[in-house]
Each structure stands twice: as structure tokens, then as C-alpha cells.
Length: 639
Image 1 (cartoon, rainbow, N blue to C red):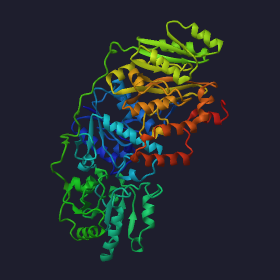
Image 2 (cartoon, one colour):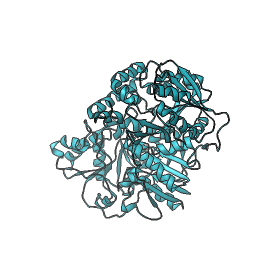
Image 3 (tube, rainbow, N blue to C red):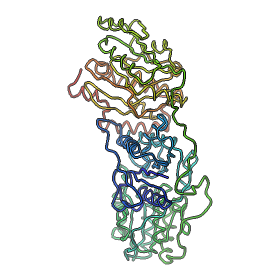
Image 4 (cartoon, rainbow, N blue to C red):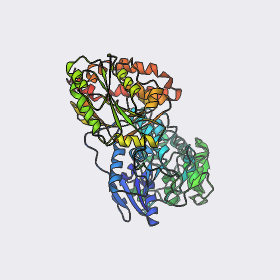
């Protein structure tokens, strides 16, 4: 079996954390005779070893612009796996949505259909925002990037064939069935540990991890045993009240009695194993159920008597630990002193106990559900109508029509709506069009012209195309197959290739709950829509002078329609001096945005309102400007 592990954390040579556990799992799978590839940007020398193979991530796509670096990373993962596949199993962490493009390509294009795609739950790395209830992510500042990451992670968890959890506590956070897999033991390079007499606290530092209770317990224990010293090892995190170092925050608040007794030694790298305390040293592990399971596995492998809190990862995974109530420094101090006096009373070992859910019998997960491959041919009767509204842009319309005719899909109706053009060149160009359905009406505006086209269309699916834009030849066929395969989709769209005054490819995210009310993460006008869905929501709002496409996407979401983004080009978006973006919408952005917020205020549920307010503060204070056309005008471009 050929297995790929995709993990950004593999680039960090740490002895705990997601990367360390992925590496240990890969070694176990290779030991079972599987061919295993590690996919990452970089790989430390300690992990470059046979029989594992390192696959370096493909370079970034030139001239592509993304809302976040994590979305760019997902495209790079997709490019890498396409180049080096096929694989029987592909394993991802859910953090950051690394599997997003791969899962979209599988869902919409039928790619990677034979592979089992597994996503491991890693709440210690997952996004901030309304979905983060515990772990470091819950204490970091909310940004538009974190809201997009939360959306991408949710997409990956929902679309994966198999969800994997390495502890019961993490498994219980999932609404989907989860495969429980025992963490593989760590790969230890040596045994030469230091002889210092100390109490070790192992694990990440963040609010809710129990490190504050540990320091209070250390003060009490030091009062009874003046020779004790305390060492903290694990990742620092930017989770103090204003998003900076949590260790600096803790250090400033240490009582005088502890300032010379407590040392923070940083994260544990593989090369640092020899500097850790000797076996028998009392080891306190984090209270949180969001601590990576590799921390408990490392403590057990090194022979430490472990102290853990009820409900924590360590209490879940290990037997023979001293269990204390979470947040109780007095009980914790007592357990520390008892472990110092009797270090080998209860040898710690991995737990063997019944657990709810399905436990993986081997390191390789089994497909949980069949994947429906893309149909080889189009479904019968899927006529597509491309609606081209036209108003005084006759010099472009013939090129737009020809771009549709070059499509890879044969059953296309081209419908051109002349919205009361007065320009003689445009009138002549419209009259000279052949082989298209033509509608002429009094000038009513772009949204009304699109609605007229939808009303007259014969097709099951509608593709709006502005007269000055072009349609990529390879969009309609894949879009039809995606819509036929998934009846819950109200629309799909693709990437936008800007040309003219601007030259780059814009990568939309899709509808991000909450965020998409204030930041247009959707595609632009061109996509493929179910005609019935457009009619159900009343088409475009004809009263809007701009943002009518943004408004439509929100209304389709409110009507219960799903949507998605094909990882292919879906629109060639011409930017020229007469574009409505420059002449109309950029000057009305504040008014239009406030109109959308008033119109769709019912989406601002209590659980979404606070993250949205925090995100608005982030956008305001950072001066973030997502619009390339606005930036061009600020630089002296079209007025």
C-alpha cells in the first residue's frame, strides 16, 4: 500500500507535537511493509531515513493571489500529490485545512477517487474563532485569516473518508464517527539524559493548559522541599492577553520564591532528548484534552512517573499515572512531593482499555464510505445557458460569445440581453450576432438584464458572463459534472484570471459563515447556477447598482443551498478603464456594504456576532484592503 502523510509540522524537529507523531506513525506503517511518503516543505535530517521517502512540496503558483497563506499551501499540496501520486491512502492534519484543495478536487472533479483520504483531529493546532473552545487557538486574536482557517478545517473534517483521533477526549468533540488510533511510540535517538534533580512540566504553555496551577503547586512544594527545582519544556504560544509570549506573561508573575527555581527550556527537539532529566523524574503533563498525544507517549517512553489531571490527554492514554483534579494546586503539590519520595511505585505504560467508537486495528485506516467517481460522460439533458448582458460594450461582445463557443461542452445556449444600449457600435454588434438567442429590453441595469436572461433561458444551468469578460474553455464540462453529482449544490465557480490593467489569478474561498457578510470571499459574477435555485431566491436584486452577485451568494446560502469552488479557472476577468468596478462600485463600497449588513442582519447570530466584531477590529486596525482594483485606483489608475 502506498501512503502519503501531509503535515506542515514535519518541518520542525520536535520530539513532541503533530510532526513527531506523524513521523512515528509513518515509521510504524513502513514497518508493516507499506511504502510511505512524507510530504512537507522541509524535513529535518533526523527524519530523512529509509524506508521513508520525503516529497518536497511543489513551489507556489506564480501570479496567484490568496486570502491566506494557508489556502496557497493547500493548492501546493494538491499540485504535489497530483505530481507524485497515485496513493492508496493520504493522511492530513485538520489544522489550517491542508486537505481543502485535494478534497475539492475529489468532490467536484473526481480526482483522487481511488484513495482513502484521512484527516486527523488536532485541536491543539486548529483555528481560532467561534469554533475554538479550548487549546492555544481559543486564546489567540481573532482575524479574518483565522475565520477562513476555521471554515477550511470544517470542510476537511466533513468531506474526509476517515476521521482519526488519538485520544477518546478528542474523539468526543466530533459529530462524525471517528477512528481511534493508538499513538505510535516516539523514536528516541539516545538515552544519555542529564542528572539534574528537578520536577519536569512537559507540554505547551497556554491558558487552560494547567501551567498556572503547576506554578502555584511548585511554590507550595518548594516550601516543603527547598532543594526542588522546576523545569518547563514545551512550545510557547502567543496567547497572553494581547497575543504575545505566554511564558513572558507567566515569568513576570512568578513569586520571588520561584524566580531562581523555575527554568523554561523551550520546546523539546529530537536533539534535546539527551538534555532531559533522568528516568524517575516526576513529570506533570497538561490538564487540557487538547495536548498532542505525543507528549504523553514521550513521557512514558522516558520512564517518568506522570502526574495528570482528570479528563486530560495523559489520563486518557496512560495507565499508572497519578490523577489529580484539574486546577487544584494543593492536590498537585501533594502528588509532586509523593512522586519525588516514591518515583517508581506505579510504572507508567500505555493504557489498554475499551473505548467508544471504532479503534483502528492497524496504522492504516480503512475506507469508511465509498467515493463516487466522476461520471465518464455528461448526464443527458443538461443544457447550459450562458447569459451575457450587454450595455454599450459592443466592441467586446463578439469575443465573449466566441469564448463560449470554444467550450469543451457541446450543449450550450448563448443568450445575449441588450439592456437598452444607445451606442451605435453596440447596437450593430448585437444585431449582427448569429447562432445566439437575443433579448432586447429598455435599460434597467445589469442585475435586471441578468434576470431577463435567466427568465428566457432554456438551460437547466445558468452561467452569467459579462460582455467584457471571457469564459475559459475547460470550465462548463467539469462544472456540469459536479452539479449533477451533488444535487445540493446551488452553484459552483472557479478561479478568476484577471487580464488587462491587472494580471493575476484570484482564488476565492467560497461562503465563510459570518465573515462573508463583511469580506467578499465569494467568486465574482461568473459561475454555474441551478436555474431553479436562482428562480427560488428571486434572481438578482435589481435595485442594487453593484454587489448584486455578492448579495445573491448570501441569499442562496440563506435558502439552504450548498456551494463550492472548482480548483480550475472559471472566469477570465477583463480589467479596463471603463469597468463598472472603477466607475461605480468602488465609490459606493461603504454604502453597499452597510446595505448588505442591514439586509442580512438575521445571519448575525449570537455565536457569530462577537467573532465578526473582533474580525472587523482586525481589518480596521491593520488597514487590510482586499480589492486589487481599489489599490490600482489609489495608485493613480482609472477614475
